Length: 456
Image (cartoon, rainbow, N blue to C red):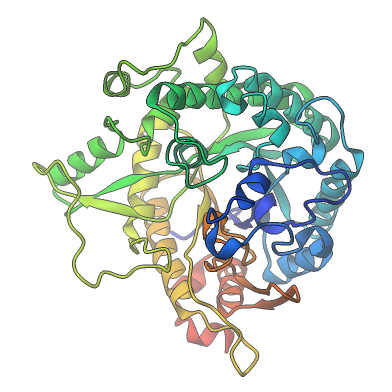
């Protein structure tokens, strides 16, 4: 068995990472604009002011998507481009940009997947408390309603929030992402609860205001523990570790996923985070548990565990690493979809998977990135294995379409299928672009073909 007939082969981007044009057409400022102004906050003083210049070059980028053969494109809307102050006044020029983009995607037979929030929180709302303010859930719902009323007649697939573990954990606890706070556990868990509440209110707003029937999910980080062997005891240990919550870390699945999909916080998490757990009002969990249509998550790597050993196994010396120093672990895609399907029982969509590398335009005018091809091929084979065993997987989005602003890493990490020369904005499809094009065209069958024969 290969991939399903209507499998959604996609690629993904995020507004602040690709759009640029931060001071154009009425866009308001965001916490990332503020964070990039801090000395030393972002590598080499980089910022997203121009980024990949997608705001001006979107027509060229859609043409490249069509050349690639994408069946779906995941992108985010910049909240402050639509509502410059985060609430109230609607910026019609901002909405018009996304309306044009959606029209172009549909004309190219590419399904738009809209993410409503991918970390670029409006600065004016941050000054009013941001995620620490319970009103943030209502602010987000109002924003979702504005977008749904404008685009909900054509857009069918929606994601509310991207990776809350990151924008809360890295941004509000560790201080290494925007807004750069180092809050205590009481404040962090309160902000996390408001984030979950915003998700639920956003789902309700989409269902109330989209004219076409929406299919809705959200995109947390998917963290998975991998069994050291196929022994039942190791598989059981990996499953238990995947869904455990330990004190001292926000990097888990169930604190974020169980309220959304099961309508309750995990008992071990409530115990692990005591006495810092957030105030939960009557009706909060019902709102957070607003029904979703699919289970989406982002995933890049996992850790191996063995029964009887509480900590992940140490990586062998020389284990393959990406430029981000993330371990290359293809089985994570198999075990993650298997474990998540067992627990949450919804169709699965991989909303991000990819690798950062050191890519440049060679003397022959091409960008040779064999590691990215090998990485993606190995991961997709593991995803295919899960599908063959009966897991209902509906789509895969490669991160990312374009080289872009990689948050605190600036422009030193390149994840794209398309190389971007930042001084000129020139796009050069990489070898991985041409390889992925063949994977899409054959609905995955070319995974069994020598990659060198697919694009040379």
